[in-house]
Length: 206
Image 1 (cartoon, one colour):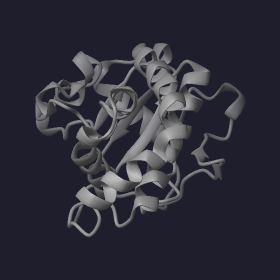
Image 2 (tube, rainbow, N blue to C red):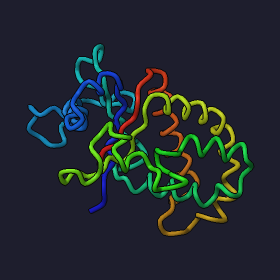
Image 3 (cartoon, rainbow, N blue to C red):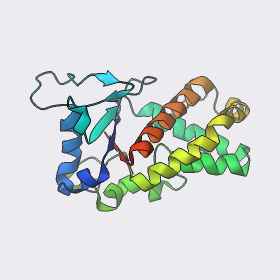
Image 4 (cartoon, rainbow, N blue to C red):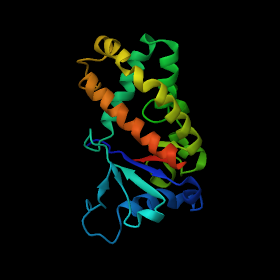
């Protein structure tokens, strides 16, 4: 069975006031309330986001990707696709896409992934007490930079079509089509734009 991705945006100051060991559980409990009996009984989705009932005072929400089944693998495959094509685009587009995707679904240096250390201590590190590692940790300052990078990259996505066809189309472990690839990127663009608008950070949990 593959790994799933649960992606949250959160008020970083509010989340940071909790004990480190309690932060992941607090995100999950806010959207998957423990008093509900059904493990799949979440609060309703609104515009792609799952908000707690008291939305006015809510401090976090989970994003429900419309173009995936909730599995992590489509995101991982899209990151690998970008790694394949990035050498075939000009420096400006490459820099914008690197900034946008770095730390979300791609890392130029996987060993530098902040999720490996729990986001510099914001979450417990992988393996500490048998915990799985968080999949991504992106504080508000990084989110705002990614949103700006997406604004530069999104109008130029069609420039990736030809290198995608040459380097990724038909390969196992890559998105099924260029449209699948760009649809997922646009969802990530919407996520970063909303989080940046609120001044919140992003957390991906398995």
